[in-house]
Length: 113
Image (cartoon, rainbow, N blue to C red; front, top):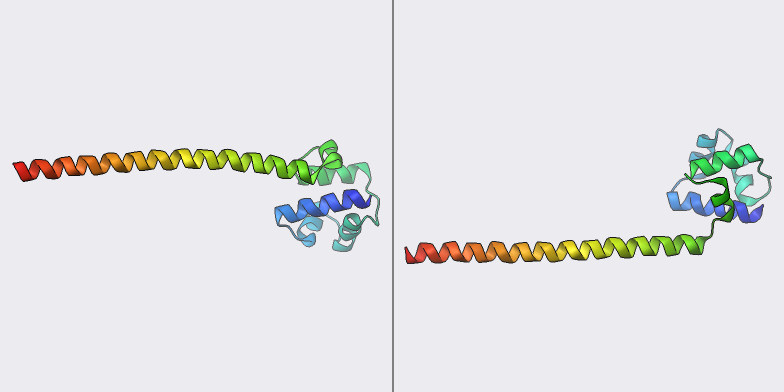
């Protein structure tokens, strides 16, 4: 149970939630939730389902949650978003070049007119 408690604590930290916030969402006391995180209290199935739902995952995912896999998934998503950002940056640079070229063309036409 201590391993599950550590997973729950990690997930809570990733969400930026306090023990008090999670305890309120689960409708239990802060000490009761603290005992879940520390592994002092065994979690029944209904409470496990409630916790999994809170973190928007299945009970199986909660039980098999692996921080390394999660980190790899986040790194992959970050890499994808970074590539999209770089593509957009290239598009913006190309558009800026076009604007400058059009400006220069207009300026040249005014000078020759």
